[in-house]
Length: 381
Image: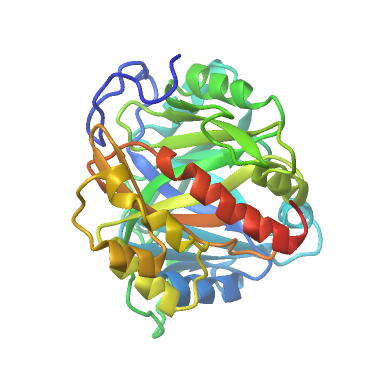
């Protein structure tokens, strides 16, 4: 496949011409993180990211082995789960990986069919179709394993009217800071080991019917010191996009190698969340304590020549360190947080698309040099 975007126009309601439709996905249902302290993590995501309380499960709801807090902002749902017992799978995940994404849940019309289709194509089952019900109706969930210890859960909720899922109760909290303008999950990036990228690209093609829409090699994504390779996979309606990264040879240790060293395996590197007002969202998050990667002033000296006319004031973008890139469809604004956990693993991307459906290729050099500066401070470059 040629590098870059395929010669198709695409968007949230347009079909990628290579994706198959045997697994229709309606969107991202929720993302579940295993964390060391769910109560404190929930406070952080509410305070810093503007999420609001939605639902809760734990001892008070009859769950004895874990506690989960569910947060919501527009179409984004985060589930933060902590074990209550000294042993078990959640503890093992935390011991090995630290805080990180365990579940990428996908909203479907038929969870049993989604499980049957994917396992028939070679996926390893994580959870057979299971009906869960309470007084608000029922949900059917199923699941499969993906890279590392990450799993996809298929969620069928058309017959459910509760706050989140059976077993959860509404979480009514008087502390709900104002939202910062995050709308939905634009894409989620997975880091995999040396030589594993094509294995997982094939998995998403063969098992889930995704199309490969973008390819970046080590010439596209490199600096004087480090490099990586990436391929972007998408489902048919473009609502689910998964870039898959692997390391490439460089003079020093790349961010992907650093991630794998500290996460001890493959996993979700970052969650890209969309906004309709980049400056307002980034400003609000910075005021609430979120740390972003530093972009040097000289990035903006030739910005207009590189991207052409834009609606935003370049001086304001410079003030907030916001990156800009353009493709044939329009342009985008993006900025990346520093890791939001103690290990240099999980971070977030804030993105605003103004027509563009690419991933900021023109910003790669500036972005990865910014990451390298952080690696140098950590002593891991």
